[in-house]
Image (spheres, protein in one colour):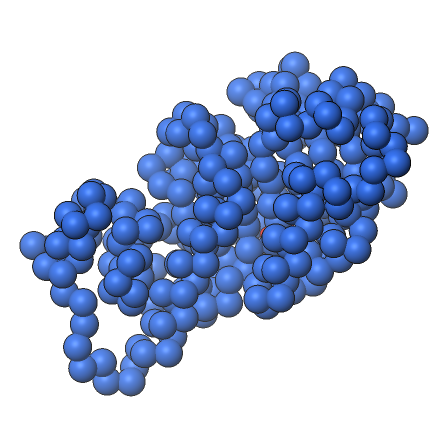
Length: 281
Ligand code: 2HA
Ligand code: ZN
């Protein structure tokens, strides 16, 4: 009934549609990195009408899903989203079951399924965190489009052995690889441990997104945001790389380090402003 079939271009394989292919390739790549075991991880990307309209009927979709957290700020916006309980590994072989394209209704209380979520699948269990983060990031940056959550192995490991203070965590990450401060000068946000999948963790995550693009959920994973899929992945990849270096080097008798002065020279050389209160120079 129109919910799992392309309304237009019915004969076009889903993987030939650029925004579906991009999700399929990204989820497969992230699964190969070992970050998205089983159904771990979820991605949502805002789609502009111009990129969707050649392929899908923007007013189509007879399936309606109610939201328990109204998002009037996102009324009319279109998203491609991974499915609840779905495996990143499987998106590439069956995008129509594992992904969906949804449009937020004008009241902000429902979404219409324009494509995908075959077999009555639902959007990610972390939809609240995604939608609320999209709202905050769009306020901060109109070019914002992507929210990505994944179970980056070394970031999770680091949250067991490092102080969870956001400034201390940020500084350690900056010290692990020279370019970190350039890639995320605003640092990382950190929540306390919380039960995932709720509107509450969504609100707390989004609050942190007011001033940054990365939020860490201790012992669980990471949220990253950005204007493109590539840039958002690159941001998360950089934080994870720093955490990996930390897990390799910490406790092994570090003999030299990148100093606070080095970090502030780097920031000046690359024209970025480091988060306040992290460096002592
Ligand atoms: O999609 O990662 O946080 C499963 C999760 C929940
Ligand atoms: Zn998760």
